[in-house]
Image (tube, rainbow over all chains, first blue to last red; front, side, top):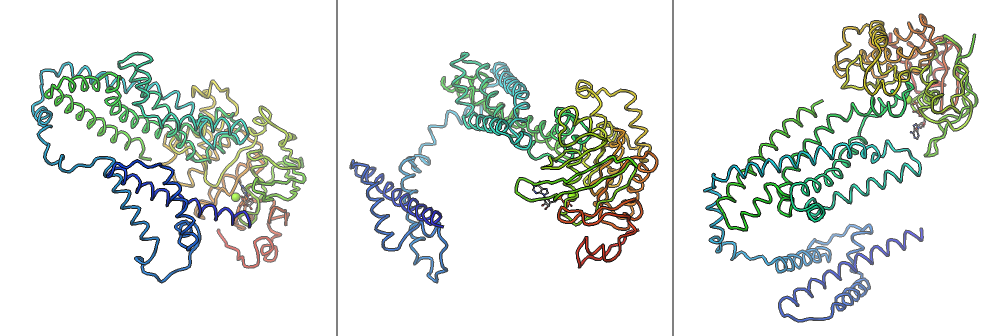
Length: 334
Length: 255
Ligand SMILES: Nc1ncnc2c1ncn2[C@@H]1O[C@H](COP(=O)(O)OP(=O)(O)O)[C@@H](O)[C@H]1O
Ligand SMILES: [Mg+2]
């Protein structure tokens, strides 16, 4: 009883403190931005803290509205503190964001001329470089394909250990599950582009670095997708095959794999599709293929070449998207 | 008559603390067709799953064909399970595989891992599988995918799978609960035949007294994890029925 009371008081206090500190943080940023005034940032915290105390004493608190059950009030919305603080915060956030990002509609509407080069290039692509372009594209597609294929065995094996329902509920089982899940989540949250930077230093700029980057990312992503599929399987066949006296490995092979094989294939094809797209981006930071070619031509300001490259990337992505959607549909229909 | 199954003072606690079996004592003799009655939640599924250690019992003793089930593990456990066929309410077949592959999976306890990984079954096993499919009248469906079969047909495939084990015991957990009455009787007929012709001991949970009377040689009724009745099917009258199923229950006849 006592503990929950302290808990909710704490929650209300922290919410109020965050609210007021954010409020003054925004105000501080705007003052600084417009007047160039440099004040000690501690002021923000002090102001937030004081207002929390003062307003709670007056009985006005956002935290209380959020965390504690409130009696129905007959007040119109525009008479509540809650509504006005929401509007104020929204307004402040927009102001701060607008200034921070440097939103400038004037530039947008008047400086179109700067993009004339690339626009002309897009509508007059240079067909002469189609040979180089195709070979770079092939590099990208093969890179994505190998990254996907090499990721499959790793993800396949790992997914069994990352499926809650398959891991025994022992200390070892739980540890293995947690470690694999955590690493997979961590690796997945590191973008392929970051992996590409790492590997382009490691093995040198080129498609191999790109492949390694996409492979690491694919292993992590497929492990998660695969293991979620495993967690959704029907337990019935597992029970039935176990009851025949089959060993654990036989149960996995006969009761589990037949249930997951088509979704696994569908996910994998989808992954290849994503990898082709990512391979282009990864090329930009040293992963080779069409991305690298695009970067080079853009730096040389050869807009007509850039135009052709963009059209070809679009075509490949579009074809991959269509076919992978078709194949997945076929695989997933029960 | 020799006892095939001996259960002494069996208790089962689930993790969340529910006491599902409260000291079950039960012997089942060779060739008996034992019907388990009882409301949902009375512990029928739990009891059946303790018998082949699909779930661990908390305390007590289970002997099947003179083997200690509760202590068994590894190879011994697999050897015990091999002798016990099991049939489920939801059939528990692998739906996107063929009927024949499903039936063959009943032999997994007998073949080596290498054999099963390469899916290279002995010719004799395939012949046995076809033979068992013929027994349940489905030899024409051998190469069809299970998902294209009706409920009653799927349950017969499950029976054929159990037969692949040459079991001495068959455990059936509400095998007809998701079938219509006519199909239900048809499936029970196959179980009855195995019991009579092959002398397989059957324990089968059911909800229909009429089916219990028709096929059962003995009835055991559970209520809240306790055996509340044990006797011949014909001994269950109105009063006994209400004791098992509660005052409001009316007997539903199916013929
Ligand atoms: N996995 C489980 N975890 C916790 N309690 C369970 C579990 N399975 C069954 N029980 C409980 O055990 C009791 C017996 O259930 P069950 O054996 O399924 O009965 P029946 O098959 O007769 O319907 C019920 O009270 C049920 O809630
Ligand atoms: Mg049940």
